[in-house]
Length: 328
Image (cartoon, rainbow, N blue to C red):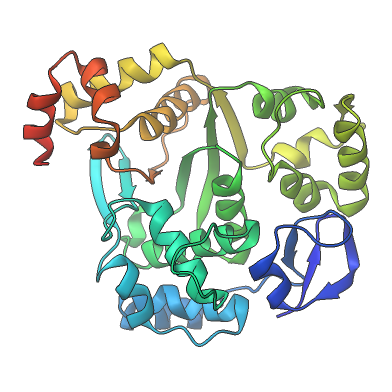
């Protein structure tokens, strides 16, 4: 597979560039020259494979590697994802059921294998990070009942890698409805709802992927030039609708996150970590403002056991009691 960047659609690079560097010589983020599309035949063939083999198959498609299901299982165990129902039409995909109880470390180990790094643990490049997320999401969808489709996907935005992985997966053919992004900073909300964003703010790195994917390389070049100069970027006439089509952003306070952690445990007997609660609050806001009733899938990347102190405070219980509940 050949790669281009978010700032130049003509110069091509091998997968080796995308596995070792975040950005190309022009400063743009790497992405496939042509995003693969999963045919119905390919999707129907995936259920016959194990979860880990499906992840390996999809990653080989992106990087031309020879990963096996055993490679993925070595870092993530036989079933690195668990699906849990937490309320009306809401499922949580816990991506942290691996040896380290941490999705980030699992991804780092897998990234090292993809790039043939001599080190057993490296920070994935921007595209490798997204590709692993796409492979995981496709593998999850294979196991979901058809009557749940299409699903809205809910994520805490972070560096915007997670929303873009979902965006690309939808482009590849997964039956995904809206992508609901919840953040504790208003920059993404400002862009999607008002069509502007300030360059002097701390913007998520992968936000330029969304500009390229929806508005094109030329507009992304303008976007990057403006925000890197610390100025105010504003979309041109007619651009706001395609930019936010199928994408919804919310802004959530820490107090709201604390409240969600407590209420979800009280109503569903489920312990939710801060990042997952951030996403869940975004789903609540989306449903309240739009009347949306579609089934939703929350992507959870951190085990609650990694945030004991914060969760215990939110639930107004001792850390000892919380550890008992979590079994850690």
